[in-house]
Length: 93
Image (cartoon, rainbow, N blue to C red):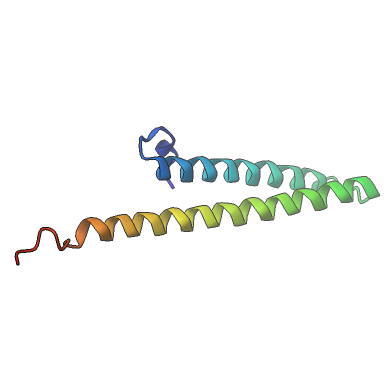
């Protein structure tokens, strides 16, 4: 996914880029929180809950980023196939 598509006039590409960017930011923040809490080796009740929540956000961010990338790739492939395939309106009769 190209983050520069955020400034594209093509709305589906822009929407996919926005979703991908948000998912990536959630992924990175959650990974940082999970790593910080797990690296402290404090397994008290509160830090364990925070680490579990961060890991859940990490997984949600990963899955949403993967889904958005797949969705963008599928849309891009369909658009490319539509551009390459001849239409019946331009075919001679």
